[in-house]
Image 1 (cartoon, rainbow, N blue to C red):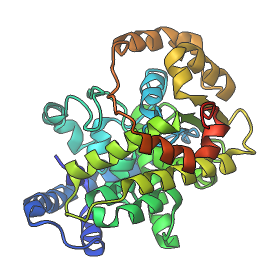
Image 2 (cartoon, one colour):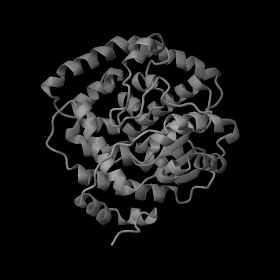
Image 3 (cartoon, rainbow, N blue to C red):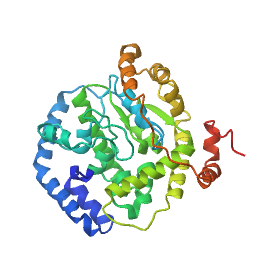
Image 4 (cartoon, one colour):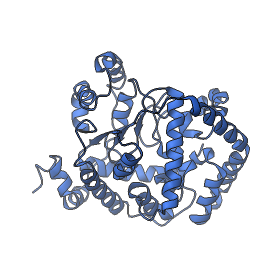
Length: 360
């Protein structure tokens, strides 16, 4: 199923109008997405009324915890571990049906469960009904700003990437509409779980000030990884997503430049935006350290950010880590050109995080 099968009609029409023609072979998929939006509209309105009623009697939502970091930097691994603690998060059902997952989605859960992929499309991470998901896909179905809009319409891939990462070329009205959809989606998650929310989204890495304005007491966890590995994995990630979900053909993208430009800018933006955050609101860790000593790193996060009772959750973290002990990451060979490009364009990031020891 295409992610836009969970979109509302207004978002679909806006995307189709602004991003150019789709490929003839994708017309049936587009038609099904439109029919889905029309057929689900009454349920969306019903859930809207249901949520509005619940919000009137619900306590205030605690400030969320945001996991940030460039794609392919270990954000998913960290998210999967922490989600075993006392947090609410985005389920596959909330990701696929953001407007009606608490009503129609519950009735259709057996069917939806049978349709989940066994693993993620971009790697071999197992997908289960309780697997935590990013909120970028559901927000891309109901809001005007999303990285995935560039995946669906790759003729404007870099345009949508920069809108999502840095709010480039976003109007005040678009930003306000995104923030409204975002806050409502988080409140729905809070009403569902009744626990502090843990949200993972690499796209938020360049937008920390915006999230702090919405949630002044939010916590941020930045996980980083060797830029050489991030570059090759992200290039493959972008290519795989576009091949799977694009609704239009396009000339070959200069993914080497797009990945490195976006990565370097994002990492510099994170450093700038978090420089003066107090230690109880911002923590950093490396993916390599998380792999070597996961429980030590998780305990440090709990203590620094006051995330709760680590001792109470240690066993559940340990049990989860045992289930992924034999996981093998996809090996992507590094060429001499790859290495030279990263060393030339990302030297400051390599030096900042201690990966520059072997640069000539």
